Amino acid sequence: MEDLMQELRNLKDFTQKCLTEIKNDIHGIFSSISSIEHKLNSVENRVVELENEQQILRDHIYKPATLPVPIDALKEQPNTSKGKKVHASNNKKTGIQPNQINNTGAWDRQRSGPTSTKTATTQMVQS
Image (cartoon, rainbow, N blue to C red; front, side, top):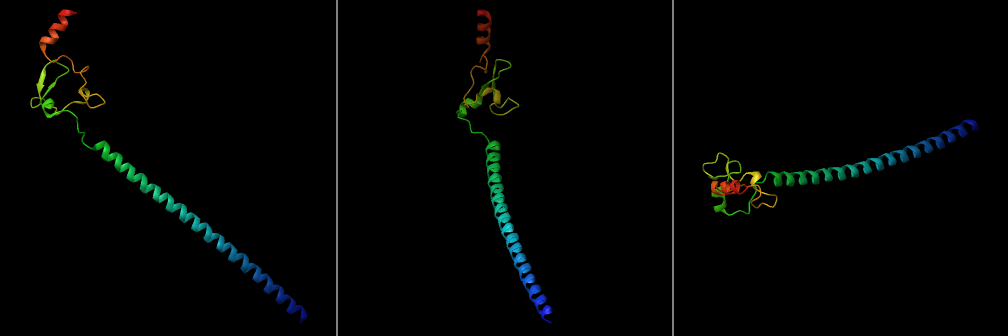
């Protein structure tokens, strides 16, 4: 009978030890889950920031350019291929073409070519 009582005490101690280990394991699991949730929230916040930055870039890229060129300059513009001025309404392409503007937004006079046939003829005669 004494042996049976001792075995029951040993079983109770073993059960307590197992329960303590299980509690510690569960606590560790919940700590890991909490850490993962925190990291996931950080990643989600970063994704939102990147999406916002992407939208800002899209808005900037697709936003119509505002040119620092007076309206009068848009009415007649040099045609680089023929050396003649072409009225904007006669031109199939509207507005200033990209090859007529340098990276500062100003007219690129080096690429615009001669503005009249007289200038072109004078340049050819002088050469």
